[in-house]
Image (cartoon, rainbow, N blue to C red):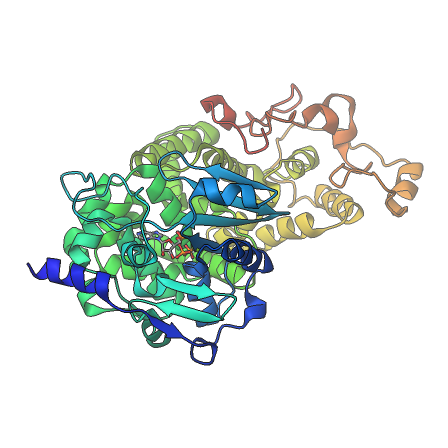
Length: 505
Ligand code: ATP
Ligand code: MG
């Protein structure tokens, strides 16, 4: 009864037309391509607005990631109006209007759940593909500040649910009946947490109230969707705040085994905190973050624990690590569909960790050529920061990663000369190759165009016939399988043998 009244009220509610002075959006901050799409559609007599996250972020003073447009034109009506436009999606079709590297996602207004749409036993909407009016579209969106429609022509914002006021107060409020809306799509609970963290705000008490109770509904959400949302959460620039909130709301239990571990094994927490702090820092500085690195960090404590346990049982270093990785990933991927290309990269980052211990020149040169060398080096820094490895040792690798070819050659050469530096290389006596004078001269020459940036320079013993870098460099597509050459006594890890393609392939 009450619900019907609320629904009817929401449908009938008159929207506010908020002028520029009140919402404060600077038109120059709006993508000119999004403005163009709206103009073209409006000139054809359709309604068209910039909508969703972009309007929310612009009002909140955050630079939007992308711009979406909502219109009453159908995909078939939109497509012919633009030179480069394609209809995408089978279940819910929308149009991608392409301008160079920018894509403006243009969707037709959709109708909210009216009780006739298919749901699962828990109330999760299984379809969401009925076109509707602007009113309908505003009702079916998740949070009040996500249902704002900006008209670039009049510079007004159409606001059905007092979203601008909520945004100014930094309150996350779901539209409609919270329980029903979370049942329709449990991912909205995670979105609530993310927006609260991103806006440095709070979740409205009514919206918050059913969340802990409904948390188990996340079990019914497809794994790939959970992964996408989890990734958004971890890369929103406020990852640590998000995870804390997930924990408070008991959402972490249902969500990921990984989060249980993070919070219930305090020794691992520092490592993760540090990884997330660094990630947040990068995101806020507008730098890219690598999902593989992030997940490798989040799972490291578990991997490391099991690795040490297998070693204590007498397994050699690399097989022990391999088994540890397999068992941890098997558990995690039961719940969360970490994409295969990320898994391959994570394995590489982990497998490189024991390889850093071996600093005989030819191993070093070989490691330098691994595609994930830089990421693995950053990872080593994290381990050093929590005291897991020696910080001078980690810094040596970082300097090597940052160094020019000449500096690298010098560092490796110096290390080979110092008895302590090569203590970890095999005992086998090896003849030191003397550096020919011409090579020294060559290494002092400025680098010429086309010289491969990571080609070992001449002072490296890796130049010797059977360890030539060209021969040891993995072929494209097999990058994740650093092959052991006959001259290499170390059994190199073979992550690709598990059938995951490397990201390079
Ligand atoms: P961000 O891009 O930062 O994740 P966003 O709000 O733009 O935030 P999108 O997933 O891009 O999120 O969705 C665009 C818009 O679609 C949202 O602003 C919201 O209006 C609507 N929307 C997205 N997900 C849902 C959902 N689960 N339920 C209802 N509406 C949604
Ligand atoms: Mg968006």
